[in-house]
Image 1: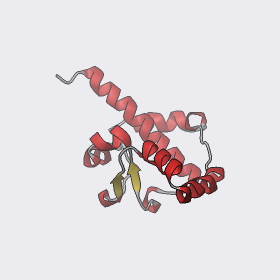
Image 2: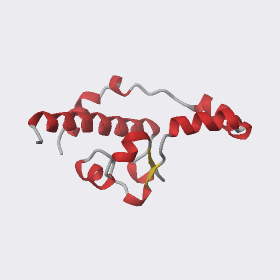
Image 3: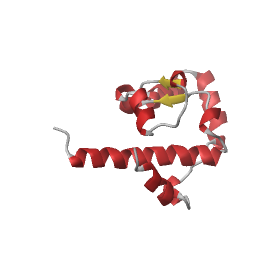
Image 4: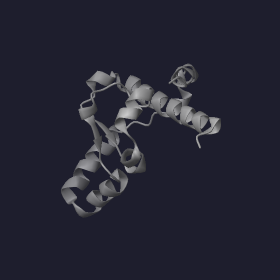
Length: 119
């Protein structure tokens, strides 16, 4: 049985994810239309319906064909870095370019979160 609490939990999770994605795009100076692909990983990527996620606003409005499921990306990346020296070199070259973004500290986080509570 679907309860009001279930709906509220989905609403809060959807708002948090949609807000984080929006703020990350904003931080990178990109709009959703500029994404070549949107990669979904782990259990989240495996069990989510991309059509439903787009419909409720969980994911940014992009063409369905650009959404890619990549499985356990953390494990695959660690394995590549440990086993393949060529991949390890790429990882080491990329690491200094990675930027940490504290989305919850963004000045407009609360406003965007409240907007994203709507379905």
